[in-house]
Image (cartoon, rainbow, N blue to C red; front, side, top):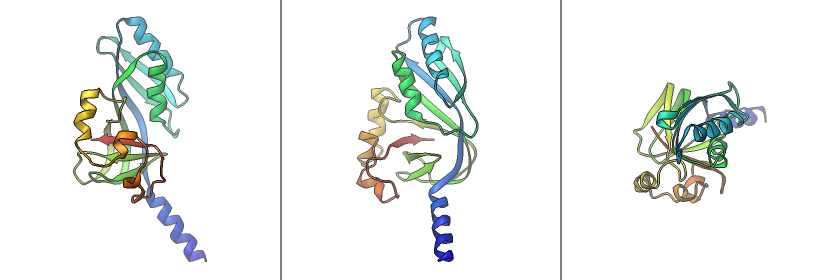
Length: 181
């Protein structure tokens, strides 16, 4: 029985990778003035796992630093921007990785999120790496169409696990983020 429990614990730890997101760069769309930038800045600072936000008004960009050892909810970032009345034009997530294997059209559990990698070479991530989130509402419509041709898996269209994801151990209808490096 102890041997079975040890095998189960080892298997479960292999499913979740050793990684922690530390920061992000967000580009917003729809801004027209400094007050717009300030509204997004305030909205992002109110997100529970955000430690600090620095805005670049000229480029409609925001540098976000996350609290250490705190789970990051990517949808909460998008929702904060949308609740302020704007849209996300791009979101790049940076984290520190330790032996995280990624392959094109495969899913990896990172922290509490499921990530589906598009247009990547098979590799093992170590050290600091940056992902670009390419889901709907995280990139422009034109960019999303471009990434939509990168996979035939249906989860890209919905952002939810489908039959294509179950083979990688993800429960049906769980949130899946689509990223590229």
